[in-house]
Amino acid sequence: MEDRKIGIVTLWDSPVNYGQVLQGYALSAILQEMGFQPFIVRYTLREEIKYDTLWMKVRRVLTGKKSVSAILKRYTCKSEKMVNRRFDDFRKERMRYSERSYDSFDDLVKGYPKADIYVTGSDQVWGASGSNNKKRIFLLDFLPKEVRRIAYAASFGRNQIEDDEKDLFQTCLRKFSGISVREQTGCDICRCLGIQGTRWVLDPTLLLPRKKWMETFHLSRRSSKKKVVFAYMLTNDKNNKSFYQLFAALEKRGYEVRYVSSAYYLDEKATCSPTIEEWLDNMLNADLVITSSYHGTLFALNFNTPFIFIPKHKGKGGENSRLYTLLEDLGLEGRIFLNGESSLDELLGETWDWPLVNDFFEKKRLESLDYLEETLR
Image 1: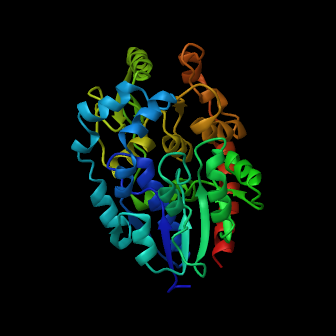
Image 2: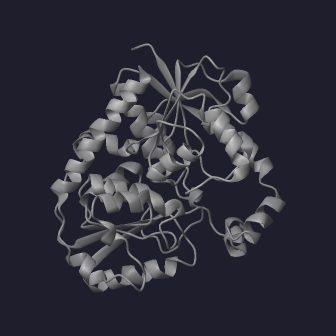
Image 3: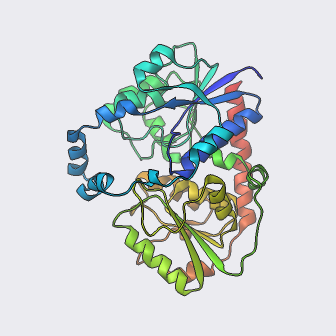
């Protein structure tokens, strides 16, 4: 097993999204612990720039997926890329990648990096956006038939796929040796496609317990004279007004608010831009985490840090489904902050049953690791 290489195809190159980088790191770390030699394939998405035509942008506006103002902001506002959070340093020091980068599906077909097994996941590798060629990459369709394909904690990021995608997903997924997803809705989608045996597993970041994160990154619990809120948001749009109101209410109650944004464009109200190591430290030592992020919520749970989750939109569907199901299983659906419906004082006054949370994840962690080891044999 020591000589067996595993190629990982996932989202990997964000300069601002902490969860994206850390899920790739966590899966790589687990595979290394199992004795494999994992590396992440450097797919650049350059092919997608040609695909994202003016008509595609107009179509997103007409279908309500994007507002005109949101698209214009991408070209008129300062980019988060201008803030150096040293993500590339983290990737260079902590992770392994393919020797070369790949700009297109055809590039991978002609010269994919050799490995004994390929894994796709985690993160929203099977999301709705992008061309068919992008989807084929994350469905590992560039591989010859003799190379084993596995999905670990792959996410659709939605409740159903479009009719014009079904043939592609059915054809590609039938070539997999094992399929696991990180949301129950993913199992439902696979079942509707006629794919049996799909397993629900933990996101890779939860495969590493809190103690492991603390040891690896030299983290420790610290006391502070002032109560601290660590706010981590993925959006920078009209919804932010409610965030700012919430921050102001917490400041009136004596909290210091440290706010970091991972939107595409810079939020001038953000008060910090931590490195990945600093982000983990803030997650561990905050008195309260407020986040609209899936991974932000997972780290708060794993670190036993009280949190409030702010959904990106109303309802349990779409991207919200990935957390609603988990929080309901834990009896923590009350931690979802619904503007105008939730009481901040009640949320701040609640007690936490961390042993219940930890027992749930420990059991699920063992199940997920057993599944991964069994599938890789």
